[in-house]
Image (cartoon, rainbow, N blue to C red):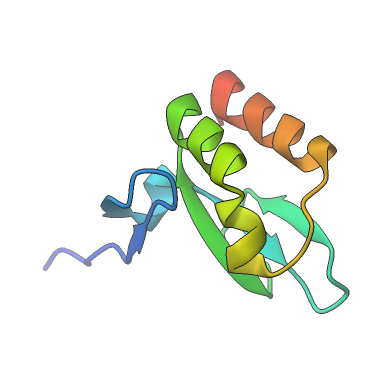
Length: 88
């Protein structure tokens, strides 16, 4: 039997994809926002396609800030660009 992959929605294009195909951004109890490469860190997670257009859309609309309810630093967006452009 094939184990089903959990589905998550990209906040850029709103498409449902397998969790493993998306980049996870997480906010922990200390309100630190990090890029979760493992998908297992604790905290509030938001997902984005491994696609620069989706990232630019999210940055422009400040959707990530609304989802995680915190101000996102330029550094985090830069790190995300690096992860997305550089692949995993």
